[in-house]
Image 1: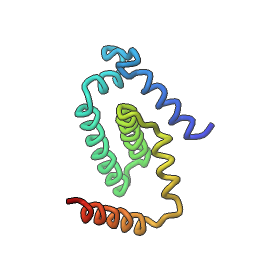
Image 2 (image 1 turned 90 degrees about the vertical axis):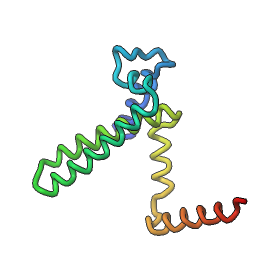
Image 3 (image 1 turned 45 degrees about the horizontal axis):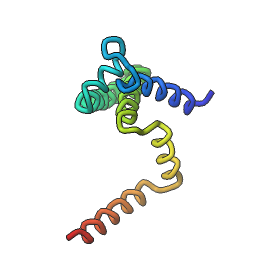
Length: 124
């Protein structure tokens, strides 16, 4: 079983918990987050990202690496809730990562800057 299968299964569960698909905010954390709207799950993403940073810093000072894995899992989960809200899937993210495969991060950043510059120059 691949990691992609696990992500797809989790994405399907999140999708099934959307309020439009009959999810009950009283019975489902995911439904409650989605029912509250983007501010709720975006706030959670910010909190989880901070917790990832803090866990990584703790690992730098000898803490158990499993805490970092736990926090990254929380971040991924809440990011998947956001993806579902916006009609996207983990596969969309994997496709983007595959697109970038073999591309230098430096080249990718330079390309984004060039595109942004040409967009700015082309706007009235």
